Structure formats: structure tokens, C-alpha cells
Length: 138
Image 1 (spheres, one colour):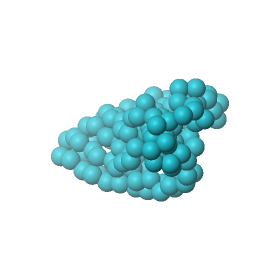
Image 2 (cartoon, rainbow, N blue to C red):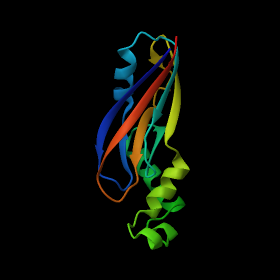
Image 3 (spheres, helix red, strand yellow):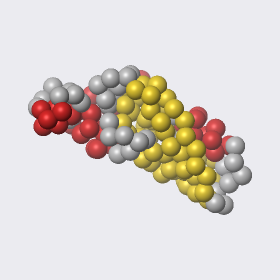
């Protein structure tokens, strides 16, 4: 069986991190599938999905690491072509990826004790992001 759902979340961009674990768990709790895989996907090319311990120190460490990998203040050909100033956001999102698959057993996501699902918006402006959740199982 396959079930698809979605929700929206308002973000402010510039490495804005949101814990979306409870929203995914809420969708999972409303269905009759008890074992399977949940895929979480954010459409667009300037945001990503991953897991992290959703704790201030780790979040700040991640933001600094992302800044080192794809600095905001360097030349991006995308910016030169389009003039929208978010070339860094596209690169960051490509490095992180737009989706994540998580197994679930007996209706429970198989996340570690300190592991949460997060959406990170890298764009250079506020957005309303759609998050697609697709559940496959039995």
C-alpha cells in the first residue's frame, strides 16, 4: 500500500532549521500501515531534508559547517546569470539533498534517541515550503 500526504511550513531562509519529526509522526499515526518506509521530500532546489539532534549547539555547528562548505559571500555563476543572489542556496541544497527515507516498525519511526527529521531552508528569503510525505508498507 502507498499513501501520500503533504504539509506546509513557513521558513525564513538563510539556513533556517525546522524540526518536522512530529508532523511526519502525525501523518504516520493516522494510517493503518504498521511496517514500511516513510519518504520525506521537499520540492524545490534551495532546501533540504536530513536528520540531526535538534539541539541548539548541534544546529549552530551544522550551520557553520554549511557556511564553510558553500560560503554565501563568494562568486556563484548562478547569481551572475539570474541576479537573484541565491546561488549559495542551490549549492547547499544539492549537497544536503531533498529527501530522506526512514523505516518504521509497528507504526514507530526507527529514529535514534537523539535523531530528529529536519528541513533546512537555504534560500535568501522567507518561503512557504511544501513537504511531501509518502508512506509505503503493509
